[in-house]
Length: 200
Image 1 (cartoon, rainbow, N blue to C red):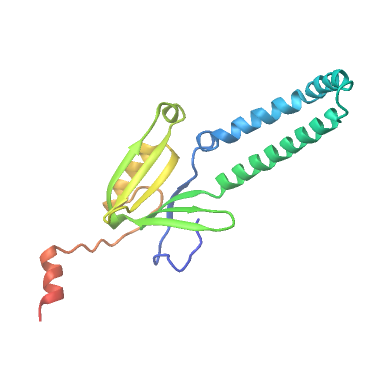
Image 2 (cartoon, helix red, strand yellow):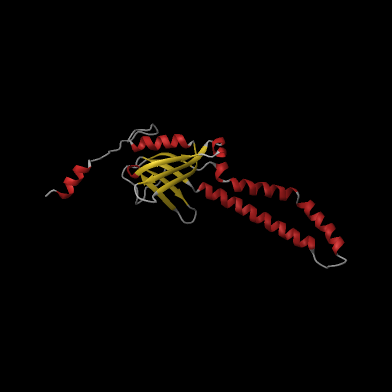
């Protein structure tokens, strides 16, 4: 559940919370992990190749080739490990939430960001899935607001059509079945709003 903060609505509850699909969001991390495993597996083979190259080159150039290559390989391993850890921590810091009043994204490790759009501001929702996203049952949801360039994007959301359906039901004020809540929808016609503002 989300903490209460200065931007919270009174009585706001989190009805649904998820993260981006791990395998899609961290595709580059998986590649880094495979490279790391290959590097560790062939570490001694690479060093022996450079040792034999050093024996051949020792007649021409006096350079510590094996030592330099081993330092370079260790540096690459350390960079890959830290990069993988950073990717996983960054993924864990992303939260997509549907509350009783709004769609919200919380993300960030050192600098926290919160992006949200109230249901009454939503004008259109676009769900897109590529071939790989369909295989992993994930997709992107773009939520457009009433103002130009106002949008919230939920990337690599698991089961995007179910999330889209839930958002549409919450926009209409339905109880989506996650938890009991009651939302008051106070919608007045344009004429009533005009009368309220300009009637003396």
